Image (cartoon, rainbow, N blue to C red):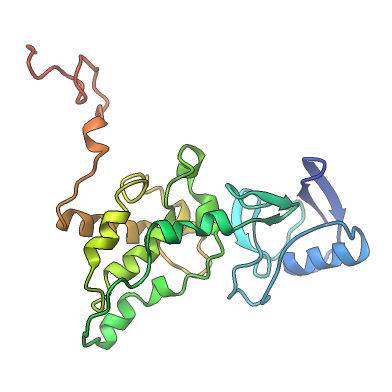
Length: 242
């Protein structure tokens, strides 16, 4: 079978031939580097789907190399919206700075009795391995590179929903700008998460918390609702006649 890998030096796909056998993409990349092309560059870590290091795009969809079973004709690319260092290796530091911008951590601890149900409530969000698959799949970054992004907003929701957090409003304030209201709720992030996290739902729940703290969608007033624009933001002149 053959696969194609986007090479950064030539800015084009290079074709490689592999034995027709079942293997993970990571194993295929290692074989290619060892036996065909020592210049091929990629990253890997645990090889067990728990570190998130080896995330790439295959046929336009984000996957972990160590979990994806390679198929004939696969087209492999680096993650979207990340500076490409070489071939499939990208710089994740700019993307993961969104966690700092969202202040997605426990701000002020308060004593609270946590039940098993409380622990399960945020257990899934805590499973995030920062593979950046959701970041790469998010279409908002194509028009707004300052968007906080799915994994930062999921982490912000995880701590804002924690009973041990006494400064929820501090988190809520930081997700207003380039945050919860910029998300299109397209589900792209949810579909590619290798840990089964649902960032779309987390962002929806975070929006609810934002409203509860007295904030509102600042983009709402700019919507035309599909009607002709006769001078106002809502598509008609409120001082005119119909």
